Length: 102
Image 1 (cartoon, rainbow, N blue to C red):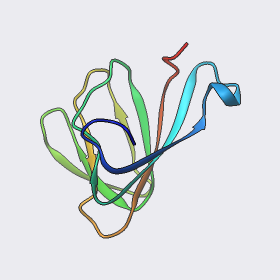
Image 2 (image 1 turned 45 degrees about the vertical axis):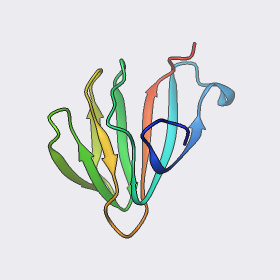
Image 3 (image 1 turned 60 degrees about the vertical axis):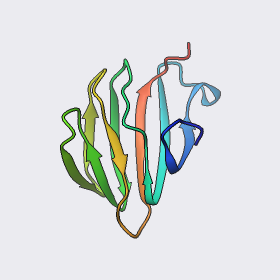
């Protein structure tokens, strides 16, 4: 993934404009052991569903929350956040965001 501050993270677009979605984008992320997203924010809300494994969600106040398969998160606009994988198995999740491209 070409996002500054990300390490050992892959992203795949599952549903987006190419699939006919005008309002949302569904993305699939995989964070390998030792990997992480940057500590960042967006000006839009997003929904996250943990699909496989477990990881750490770091919130706006830098509190760490263990998340695992079956958990869901709602991230409000402009909330600082990060996903980390300190565990030995891949950590995978779906993230749904508004289609901000159009």
